[in-house]
Length: 274
Image (cartoon, rainbow, N blue to C red):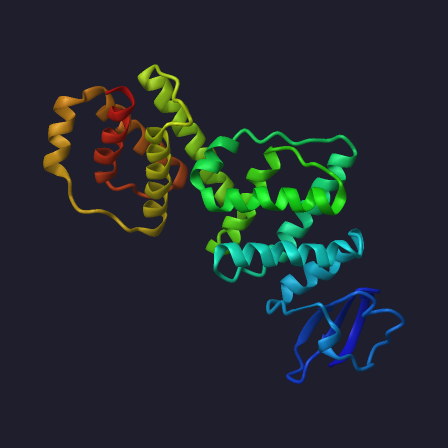
């Protein structure tokens, strides 16, 4: 490969035999290197391609603002995510998560901490991603000596979920806020305080998540008219609350939510007070 640009002592952008850009990362790989010089990719500790030109440009713009040794550290983080998730993560995580963690460390060193009001909901919604995010918090502590606040676990989990679902973090965060709002509706409507550690809470929050997914994808369940009539008669409080929740979902998502969701929500709500 030939060097197109040495970004710093440890990172070079090269051109491969197909004339595509490849980023090589390795200690000293860019030291005193000039454009056009050959470099052996075997000498690199990490090799990766960003296929999307816009993502390449964002990555190059980000690099001057982060420490040189942070780049190989982040690739250890990304490798850990891929190994644990069992799938290749979308390349946009290279920019999004690198940027987030770099500035989370900077904020923490300056004593600035961001609160995360959706932490409990994030853990329940994305359990695998949340568990991996906890690992990453420990990796960050070992790398930098900085112990990030617990709220960062949820934020990193959202980035992981974004990368494996091809959804924007902002979209996923919107769904988390919606779930949080709907849970508050349930507590106020039933005049209860839900124990976040119970299986019924976990089932409810998972159902709401999948209801949102079904609404956004247009996948609906089979007709439940007969069961709906029974539940409406037997559990009017929960049935009416379920309808209110569905209407809020429709308004927030700007998409139709199938009436069958009312049936399943009614069952989950009744479990909370039954």
